[in-house]
Image (cartoon, rainbow, N blue to C red; front, side):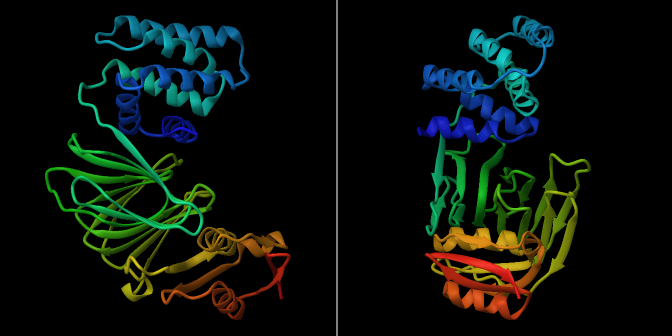
Length: 330
């Protein structure tokens, strides 16, 4: 799969606020690789099966078309209009494309080339940005970022987990945008865990100050964090929980393979261990996946050592079978 296709797929699978849509629209409407972008995006639309009436699609299209014709500036109207005809059938994607059309009309002339880094299972990687900031990606993570920051806001997009050391720049805010939260940085060090497959988003602040802003929820909130604060957002309920934990529960050594679980569901822990050790873990009883654990592993512990520790502190037992790990209730 090409880099361009991965960026488009990643964008369409999530809902974003207007500023995120603008960044995507700026990239999409840029002249570079224009035909390839149009073709790939059109292919995504063609795979959608309409589930609303043709009359509803036509009315929605005409509203957007009228905005396009009233606009000034050059955009690829035909491609976007054709795409909208398909996208109107699916609610989440429709919201994304309406935003693209709206923002593309007013897109600025400033363009940035976007880069993507992905880590596979068992792999970690450190990315240095143009402003000197670094993000260390945990296994199974994806980071999308501009090759050079050109706007008033420095923004990157994360799916997965990263330890961030952000260069201070009072004139240009830095924002890490994940699925359910934006972390607005004021020059700091923090860890964010926001995997699509996890039930919760976690932010741990080690130094400095950040604002964690929830999004795409019934009631969004902003939390100002101080060093040692650990904030968790439950993606199912939208509930926020706060704790202040010692810094030594999190090892920021880039050579270390650390894992910190603060009141984490066993289902999320199992998925995290799968990413870290490239194994398959099966939870035999569904209720066990909801059990919560507190544990910190910062000494490069083996998988069996981690599982044994969890076994001693909860209801879980484990065994190996045919190269897979099974978790079951004691």
